[in-house]
Length: 462
Figure 1 (cartoon, helix red, strand yellow):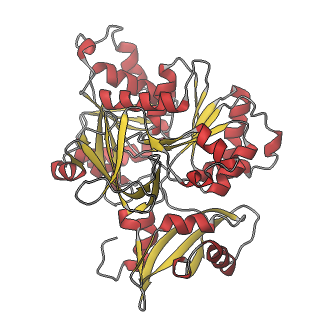
Figure 2 (figure 1 turned 90 degrees about the horizontal axis):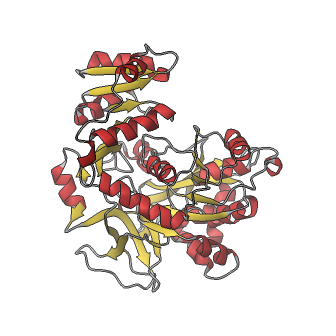
Figure 3 (figure 1 turned 60 degrees about the vertical axis):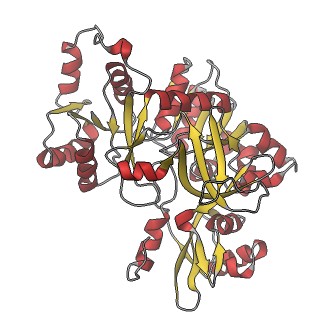
């Protein structure tokens, strides 16, 4: 069963109904074009597609391209087919509902992530339950919480929302807008939500931010990559609550957490560098940093390796991709593609995606380190660093920068800020100012889309 819709009550009830009935949900990313939607639907081969009235035109185009048995619409502008189905349905659950669960498939989340072509990560009832358990411990959920869902239900944040509802907590649905989110926190007495760096920056930049009553907030979780320490400090000063970082992937849902206490202690000057960490392994997860042969690297904070994860929260595998599944999950360990170091206390520090490392003049340059330096400039909302062709050095560092509203900053300003915190060879050699950065549904920046135009004429895989 595929669903094309924005966040809505119907969307949430479809997840639950499918879970009870033993059906598999394929949420569709409404930001994608018709051709990509057609491709992922063909791959999953659903028996039914359910579309909200916002996407009727896209639905008509898909229907002309796909041979799918059932098409349903919901919402005031739809044809009433979904509502009619509910009206005609029996109140009795299917007789097999009691046996559904465990390793039965629950949903397929399609992700191009940072690597290109979309692939379907299949999650089971068990993997979702384990992800929820990790989140419960990390977020310290209580029944009195009110959760604001700022992410979209077509991706892994839906599990966070389900978890709060599992605890009996009200769920506030929205499609993120900074002012609207602040208004909802105030009016609905929201106590928790998930944000990424950009969301928090935009919220703090709303005129009259200090006039909103945000006293109900208990905790904010951020994800999509390490947040610059400058933004962490600004958020802790601006929001009346704690912060935690959650590191995960579509494939692994929940892996590591940087706790509330880690943030508060870092601000007080105790192990401040931990703000650059994604924390330690989750409650039902085992995390290692390993060499290419799978052996753990020393916990010295210097030796690079790849993060591997063993957890009940990991995906079952990639739908229709047995070779890629075997490459990604080896002997029960999921290889994430993230390059990291870890320290004596098992804090993990991501230094880059394996594919994002820049090699300039024979030196390895990790883009996250450069981004951390650039983010020290007060006018930077967010940035991304990639390697571009360079006739002399092979690759050179290029930064894409989004300015904060109404603030000015120049290319020399960015380069000079980076030089203060980095070795000379690490600084960006060029800066391009953009209105926004391309992102995956998880909030991760799609650096391949920034690299591609520069390498299009090169014989290199991006």
